[in-house]
Amino acid sequence: MKGMVNRMKDRFCVFKASAKCSECGGTIILEGPRQDLQCPHCRSNCDAGPGFWKSLLEDALDDYVTLRPGESSSSSLFMGDRQIQLVSGREAPSCDGCKTRLPIEDISEDQTTPYECSCGTSMFVWPAPGWLRSVLPAARQVFGAPPEGSSDSVALTTPPVALKPIWFACPRCSASLEIRVETPRILTCEYCEADLFMPDELWRSLHPVRKRVPWWIRFSPHGAARAGTGTSTSAGFTANPGFGGPKQRRRRRR
Ligand SMILES: [Zn+2]
Ligand SMILES: [Zn+2]
Ligand SMILES: [Zn+2]
Image 1 (cartoon, rainbow, N blue to C red):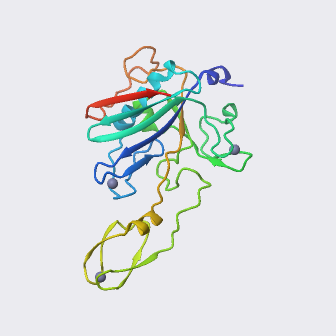
Image 2: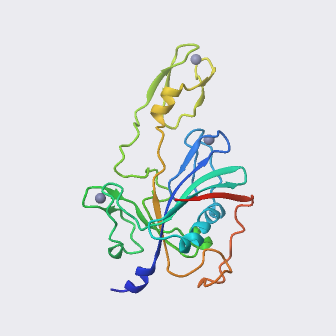
Image 3: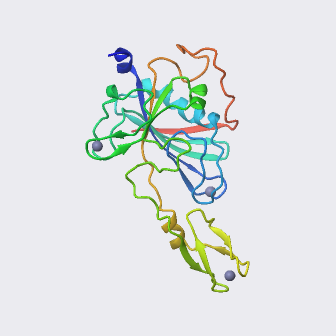
């Protein structure tokens, strides 16, 4: 099989990550490497460009050699004014439903269709996007994270959030207001123009709290995470100056 030898040496890292929204303080689940990150609580767009992801993922790849298979470590990162909780580990992708290892030797690196497990669970598989490879040349493939630009949530099998509008009575003028998933938490009554804050119960029914779910990145066997270090075979790529803020970390081995 072509590429078999190299594939055996591919490095697989598992990630679970969340960030604190710098606008509202809410928790944002980082469901995978995507730049179109939005806070589900206040709908503000997060600055999650290539530099952010490079900063987040390169340390994990550097740590790969220090971890035994199956081992992971968790850290708190401070990037600028943003706090990130990250768990990263040395682990090959497994099915979210039955926890069976994916037959990665049967999954080509350019596959874009979801992997269908025999247990009935589907899992996203897609090639690492160009912007990620330009800052992390070793990144090859993403498992378990919704592809960029898709509005899907992580598990394809997760029931979709109710898309039907909900009616909410304005506490001031009693007019019925139509509430949708995309309605901001602070809304203005279209009749009396009062500024209203959506009650917790209603907000939570539209925005259920999600757990951090794992996703994986396949890295090529060679190639350091950072520009200019060690055995990188991709010398000459331009390192993104990246996320400007200071980064500190605390970590704990599990
Ligand atoms: Zn927010
Ligand atoms: Zn399965
Ligand atoms: Zn009103």
